[in-house]
Image: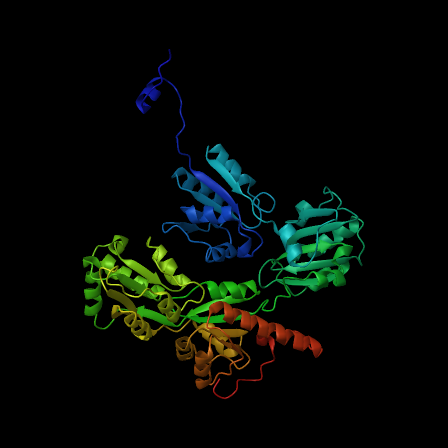
Length: 545
């Protein structure tokens, strides 16, 4: 019978070789052509779990800011300068046993030149995983309204005219569709090689820049006209070309689903509070917009913190039956107080928690707390009061409710809970003050009308934006979440174009999209070019703007 060594020392003494039980994992994660919505579930999971993330472009850095990404608190993002530096960074991270993610635009093996990186890791005996991504070679034509189904398709990547289009290269297909990824500087060489391969100069073609993003621009032309279509474009700009009769103007127009979105390409300013939900920007992006958040409010401690301190002690000592949160800021204010005295989420043990708004529920979840009561449908203090249980002295051992709130919040919720028989302690947990002004370039963009629209979610955001950045340009479309917010806009000299029928983020986004669609249809009916509000000829600013 052979005895198995039972310790590392016995393994060494026996002359046997063994590998570490846990290997460092290096994952090459495809990120698609540019639209964050094309990240796969596996990609999001890998990114959120990673200890070190290695990127090679600003687009990938921006991708990490999308709401779906919730990075590990200790995650380190590295952007090496050269391919050799990338390999060194991968080996260093793997050598320290870290979970490493190498982000790759498109698909790692189809679009990314990662062969040398994988080989270096394999030689060093590190495990490699690949998370496939959506390839721009197939996705960008679809974003441009070109159907690849039912056709012979040749996918080609042209990174260097010398290497990829030399006399030693192979001719391209003379029929069917050709999809080429390249850069603008190589478009002439691509055209020449296509002609040498037997394609006709008058054959339809479409060239797409910024594919899969809200800055996408697709131009339908001919093979011979491709170079002229991008003559004024940055030579280093990536470009995707489709050559073939299926991309004729009439065919593409019928399938142009992406660039025809009502808010496509619109730059939208969102003045926000610190307590800000991702629902509004996400919905606007679904309509094709790109959004910029500008903080207008910051949070500070109350001027007299004694009441809040007493309430926090009451939580710990069992003074309350319920704690009611109406904002994520209130959650943070209580959390900061608890942490300052060395307590964690276990302080909520035995308490019942009520909350409104997704951002509030998310803030609680970040601390491991799940609310007992969240109203369904409309999220408001009125909806919470309508679903809140009445006090029952036979069932409820304690009749007190703790409601931490902002200094500017109304006390209507407290009155409604009191009417249900509860003794409510309405405590100012934090003060809201005007945020610092945004960067100078943002302030200038606001005043000069470079934003197509601004969406106001409260009267406070109206007052504070005007105070820290000035009034939006008269050509900028103004959208308000409700009548009261609209009235505040008018008090500050702003003409309101859109008022949401319901005071909700989704209703506000939908209303703005409907406005943009009606505006586009009106311009088409009048035979005028469809341009965004920011593209209108500016003849100066009206008085007061």
